Image 1 (cartoon, rainbow, N blue to C red):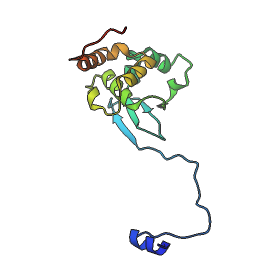
Image 2: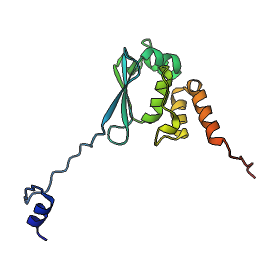
Image 3: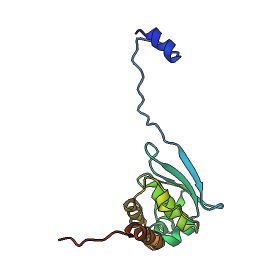
Image 4: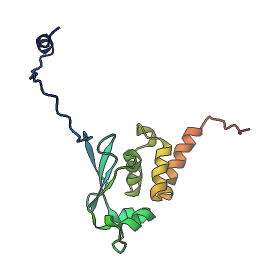
Length: 160
């Protein structure tokens, strides 16, 4: 089968050249989902990797974040010398966007998506983000409810 035959079968218009195709070093970016958690928000958080996986841009209140997390309080306090305290958009490329969605919903007094409804998120990943930002108190009821639902009907055997 020659190239002309392939073009006609696929309906493609291909320009044939003897040059090598140009390879780009620029990564392909994932779509960014915008989520407004506080209508009058003064800060945007870009969470997750732009080049792979899920990336979400949250519009949040910096004051709410400072109340629920000692890490965010230190980061956003104008008296501290963190670079982030003067930014309008902060990137968190290494954090799980789905875990952050649940934490930020809870922080802004919104019903967070139920953990079982969030596909691809494990309780471990949520715990990692909670530990990183000191939000276990905020998430205590959500996590304990999830653990209770998972343990119903299971017997825990002592390890020998």
